[in-house]
Length: 130
Figure 1 (tube, rainbow, N blue to C red):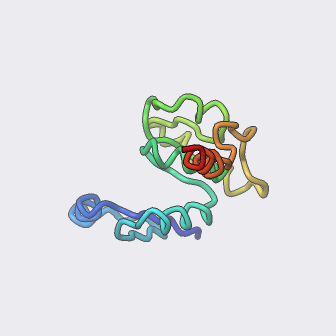
Figure 2: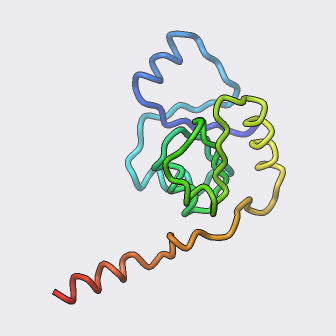
């Protein structure tokens, strides 16, 4: 009985209603602003997406992220994070979500050095040098 929170595009939400798609514990939200979405992701046990931006944020937050695409452009994010390409494999998605909920510790690989949390300091140095 775990809630599935889905900030849906208005057209997607309309189609869900139109086709009478019912999923137990599905909570459909209106699209969220950036910070509200990050807050929601931070509290998530795992993330399912087809968005390259969301998979990057999931990697930074060290969240298991299952990608509903066959390939991604951000290969460096994939190799050093807990993001996994699922494509259209529903069984694999279900199994990985089940494991994410059974695992008490975070499911992550080594932290990606690209996300060293020092970007603001580097940006400030550039501005201060001019």
